[in-house]
Length: 475
Picture 1 (cartoon, rainbow, N blue to C red):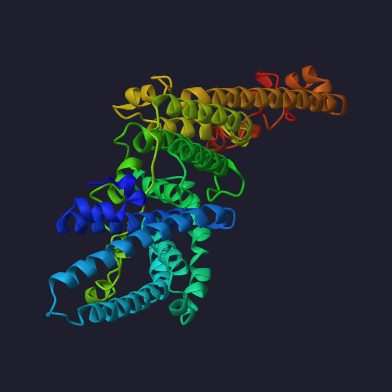
Picture 2 (cartoon, one colour):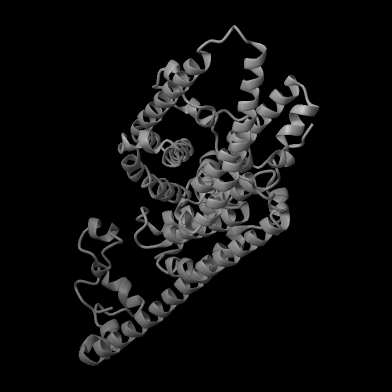
């Protein structure tokens, strides 16, 4: 029996001489399977590299010639099979082939109609998924629409497709979702409080949209979290108070470490689980996401559409690469803290506010039980403490600065008071001659009534007491 790799070089005469009807029919089926496989590979290649379609024209031409050669061989085998069948069924001829041809033509027409119907329905479905922030579903629907559109544009029945120009126009509408979904995923990954499940779905969407490897997507994710950290500390952030900005930035750092570990570490990382769920062998076809269409109509679709699901080959992400990106992230965090965080800390007006920040930071920066192992798997210090590393030194510096400023202001105020006192001494007779004032008797030395005598707050009415201390009235 001929191997699949030798199907192009089958000698038809020898095949019919050496093989029986069952073997010839098996070769026929394998040839058909090979043709369908080539078509699917062609659609996948063009769909993923649609922008480079013109550059790949030569390659497509070669594949077309190869497919044509296979089809010619298939036609030869079919003709031989029909001849053999006619020879065995002499006297029992029917118009079965004509009916089969008409049925195939009708099925092709109906399949094209259903695919165009799907293309017109998909924009609304994608928008609904985007509005619900289910970007992973939106991405799958977009890739499905690209697969359908590419298949229709490459359909060999050009006369049939010429009757439906809406297919090409509809792809012009659907193609814009590439940028819309990508932008929304990026915005979601830059949020301050980001849940691991949401992050994994957004990252999986970017992997499928850009057909990139995990190493690249981790680098992109690190840059997005750095941008989020800088955005929290910036003037235009949603937090008005300096204290809230500082606490939010600390919480973001803790959250980022957990996200990197949960999504990227190990083959069982959350990102890989999300991707394997739809691209693995047990993944469900994308058509299952479309609930609004009649199942009977869906059955008219060809297998290449009804069984389609996204496919991508990913290289495992090593622990060394994860550790490298984690260290790069930590280095950039230190740069941002040195610049923006220090400036923000200088805006804190009092030691009381700094004390509140310190007290709340200890709550925000509370480490989970698995913190040491998490940091170790990311090639970070097991005892990594963001508060002690970045925040506490800045708080201590600010406390010393505030104390120094208050001390200088107090000294300056005392100097001013002494200067004023000396000026008053030069212009006031009582201050110049304290001796005569103290020994000079006056009717106002003793309070005139018991109420004034008990009023300790009004020292002016206790002149005898003031004289005993040598305090003239101007003081």
